[in-house]
Image (cartoon, rainbow, N blue to C red):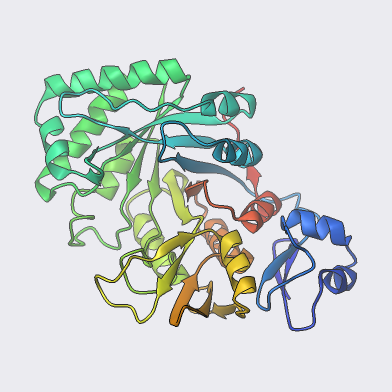
Length: 387
């Protein structure tokens, strides 16, 4: 048994049942099942973590939260819309992802399919997200071309503002990645011009998870933490994807590297500028891992629990990375799954409290992680910006 804030969470042991756990904590079994969104409360998995309902701390801090929303069809599915609607009371911002910038300063269309209405009804501040994605990948040459022409930038900025007005968005969020080191200053200049033109709007930017100002690598060198933070209202630091679909099996956001990135960020900007990035998913790898093998499959925490139950696998917990995992066999091949649970997200929540950060930003809301929302509601007040 562990404690996170006021709410407790219980790690299932052999012989436990929902009713025995409920009796142990003096709570109603139905309430326990509902809080953890258990579809089959009669079958629990050894190592599974359950959040036990408690009384929220009246002195809990207030933070801001954001969720990116991504879909791969013309319109977001009804399932995705329902999930956004369900989580909207605990969101400050919602960011449909994304409007891809074209080389002539226009934007690819993005049909929100009612997301703007959901945001307005739940008092969630929506954002126009622009990215330098071209042909399905971040493009440094696309960004270079934008940065090289003030005429194209002016056209782009006008298109961004027009779309923000059309969607009643109050935040403009820039996710430019894999920038050339030579464009480091040009990117700051573009953000500065955008900030000046977008008077009355919030401006935010996504940052790669750096640990030093001189960190090498294509993902890092184009992002100047200090100067970008001086321009924008807040940043989202992408503190996830250490374990990724094409890489070796490991926790997606291990607590040590996450802390290291945030500790460095605090040397370059104030804590109230920082939204910690957090994955709402894990990965299922086929073993043995070899570079070039089929990529790992993204899996939600809820799906991970269901898979562990189907394969009769006990869930283990790595205390170094503060993340759960389990192994199973299928069709003669071993798999390992790393994902998130109440213990792992509680470790990140405690880090936000310790460092006094602005809040947390989720990538992305299409993955079901019930315990995250239960603990978020218990440990924090969520700020709403609109009147």
